[in-house]
Structures are given as C-alpha cells and as structure tokens.
Length: 195
Image (cartoon, rainbow, N blue to C red; front, side, top):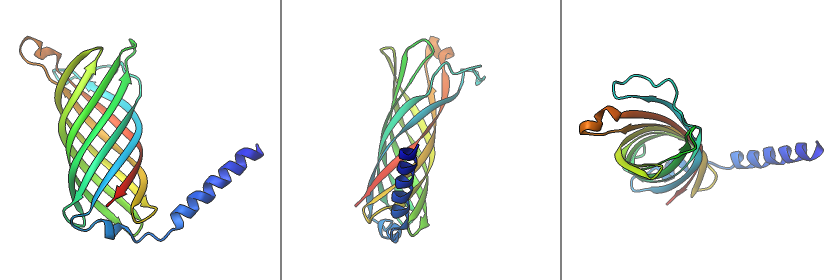
C-alpha cells in the first residue's frame, strides 16, 4: 500500500511540475506558417449502426478496439489550420472477426486558448479503406473532433482528444440493400511536435 501511495504521489508531483512550467508557447506556435505533427494512440468504441433504410440496428455486434493516428497541421492564421491525417483502427466482432479501418483525410481545424492551454475543433473528410475477414472496400468518411492540450516546452504539447467517425459502407446495384452507416467514437492521448 505504501508503494502505491508513493507512486501516486510521485506521479502527482511530476504532473504538477509539467503544469507549472511557463506556458507562453501557444501564440508562438500558432502564427501563420507554423506546422506540427501529432501522434495519438487511443481507444475506439462502436456507437451505433444504421441500415440502408436508416433504421437503427439493435446492436453493433462489435467490441471496443484501438486506434492510432498521425496528423499534420499547417497554420493559416492564429486560429485556423489545415492539413491531413492518417489513422488505423480495429474492432472485433462477436463472431471473432476483425474489422480494420484506415482513413486518409484532409483536415480543417479551429484553435483557441492562450498561454499554455490550447483547444481545437476539427473536421476531417476523406477516404476510408475498410477490411473485414479479407474482404475490402473503399468508402467515404467524415470525422468531427475536439482536443485539449498543454504545452510542456516550446516544441511539444501533450493532451487528449476525441473524434466521432461517420463511416458509410456504400454498395451499388443489386447489393445496395447492404448499405450501412457506422458511427464510432475515438478517444485517446496525443503528443504534438511543433516546428
């Protein structure tokens, strides 16, 4: 018990040191032409699925999974950024199969905050490479998200973020009745390098 209390106290002390640092880096890293790269591992939750008639499936038949993403951001102004992202995520089904999603998106973000604390709202759209048990499909995807981060130096910020993924599975012709619309929640931590 004493070791756990000591470890918890040490973690709180280290967190306090990080949060107590001078945080005037946000505006310096948000000028026009500033760039950054973000790495974000996290969890991936299936929320709900709609069928081809937009009726709600009674259950998703998917278990929670994991996600990893990388995002590039270029500042157009102190509050607006554009860029791109690449993600990879997977969930398992109740039948033991694995659904893999790999979206490639263009990103637009609005950033706010001051001093050491920064938040962003983002919208992403692109193509999603989807595979289930060896069968593949490329379809559109839209993601909307938000994040909160804290500068720990002039070049690094750490924080957390979450995104809602809207993933249509679109078919044509005789298979159009198999269309479905998946909705997922991505959540996790993030580390961003500013240059």
